Image (tube, rainbow, N blue to C red; front, side, top):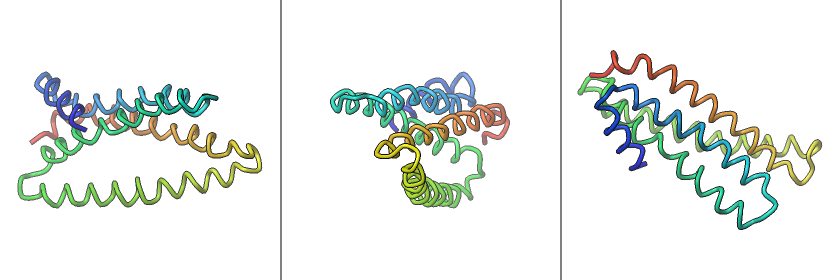
Amino acid sequence: IWLGGSLADRFGARGRRYYALIPAVAFVATIPFYVGAVTSGSLAVAFVLFLVPTALGLVWLGPVLSAIQHVVPPHMRATASAVFLFINNLIGIGVGTAALGALSDALVVRHGTDSLRYAILYGTSFFVIAATLFLLSARRLERDWE
């Protein structure tokens, strides 16, 4: 989280779009590590490979929280942060975990004991979706910045 915020602040001096581009790059970079970890036959290799996307998967939070504070007027900042964190936790952590488990259960017929492995692999598609949305928002961020 700290690294993402620091990078966004450093590159953000060149243009506010970096507050969206840095998370986009981090999300895309997580994919090969997830694929490698999930498909690895070695627990030690999987453990090491899972460390990288776990860290990269948090890079987005610092820049996004900063951007939220800058795209709303000062009197709305506390509310904007509260709404963001509520939605992020409710959907991302609450629904996301249950959806991944449900997908794993649905894949048991096709993949047997490897169903969780494939559910995680399919779940990496959300990193592509998130990166795409960040890239689209990067174009507007400069003019929306307060």
